[in-house]
Length: 391
Image 1 (cartoon, rainbow, N blue to C red):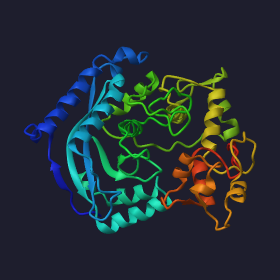
Image 2: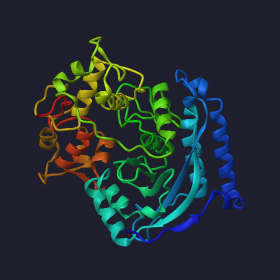
Image 3: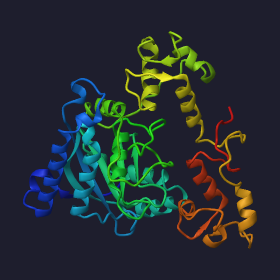
Image 4: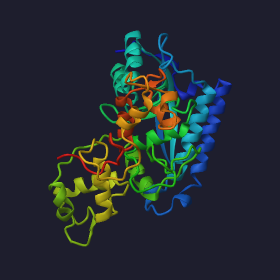
């Protein structure tokens, strides 16, 4: 566990004598005021749950390290002001305002920092986050609110992550994979903290889109009325979302028929008894649908396909979108050393894909590096989209 964190600012009350933080308060108040005019834009959500402004407290921890430039956060007070201004602009349509409860420095022990650096070489999205989360002192987390830990960089694999277990932490990188701060990433991760999954059906640069075609680097991204309803249900609890496990009431092949009690071709929570309502509500949430909404058979099937896509498929029954990894190496690995340089990969692997695969930033990628990147986008070793997985 890391050593106790040094208070950066203990509470908002102590910030008013600091000119920079006074500006921060003014920026955040402006963002809060803008929410008063946002409900008409959101449209479709009903009831008091979706009309009054909800203010959610956030405790920010700036990670500090003398031995790791990937951990040591260089974010200035002006940077932090801009980040939360953009975050609140994104959440204004939901009438949700994120308010800084306090900002603290968190000193990371050298052994943890070294382990973090090493983990970036193998798994920039997951392993390093566990290393950090395990080192965070739990007694300094905000118990009634949300906690955001900011590091300098997560490497080329991620700019932020939400870890629902065990504490519901949000981790944000000051330097995103693009090489600069992207506040919309933090707005996205806070969406996960409010129970929103990555989108399945919503495109149009939606805030909760994952890494996929159609996602654009805009300052503000839209939310649907259903997403707003779901987020406000969680916001009303005043704490991060913690997923529950619901046992499937039927095998996958017969699941839709089991839950479509009235056989009208759509699933709703209302048509299911108490025993299955939790399962159906969670299924709807995974589709970014509010508890009172429905899911068609086609939508259900698409969700099942997307869920299966993250695993290596046994066949190649999807559409081919790229060459096999073996063929890439057969053409490019002239010296047969088992890795590709940027020059060797030129013409076969786009520069952006090369950068995502080059996790240790040494200028070379292996077959394993390419496969790890492909799996993130639902592709297998042969270059096909994954549509099924072995049972």
